[in-house]
Length: 157
Image (cartoon, rainbow, N blue to C red; front, side):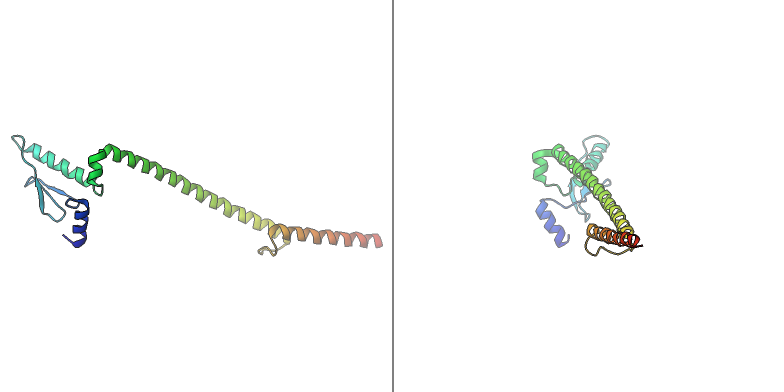
């Protein structure tokens, strides 16, 4: 057992997972192959020992990482409820992530539209010199000034 495995075992208070059921010996082995429990026959053919050993190993491995005191106090129904809450939160997070992606796409599309409108208004594809609204207002002001000059030139003719 490595140093990290010993620390984990000491922290959890039991042999670290995964456990394996050795059908030939009817014993339960730790991750390094060391026997940690024996299943005794409770029937004539020993089938009960095999079924019990497999179930014990399946339950222990399924509960890997869950504190034994928590399991003793709340059991799996409490844990299942917590998992259900986490699954729900995960679904909400996925929906929020999709909404963020949709909003980012909308933002990008809006930026493209604004850039095209700006280019159409000022006659070139550049970033705003003052600000998009201010640039367009300046173009309109210049257009109005030219219209006035044209009007004055027509009147002078």
